[in-house]
Length: 61
Image (tube, rainbow, N blue to C red; front, side):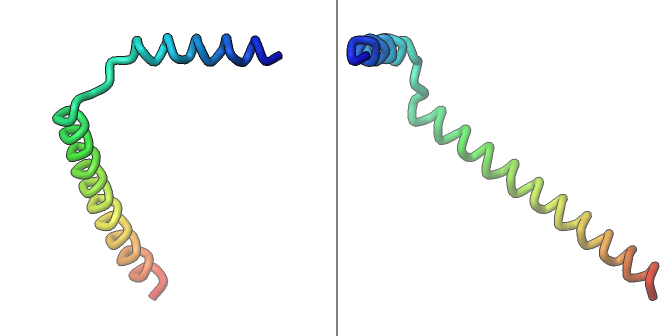
């Protein structure tokens, strides 16, 4: 059992060496893109929520 675990860990180590890790610039630009997209979606959802609440209030008055 221990031999299988050690073999698995060796294979994991070999696979990790094949990974191309992003640089600082790529990580920063991806993070900025995600934050901007999140803000835009949050704004759109808040506007839709506001409009729907106004619509429902006018329906039930």
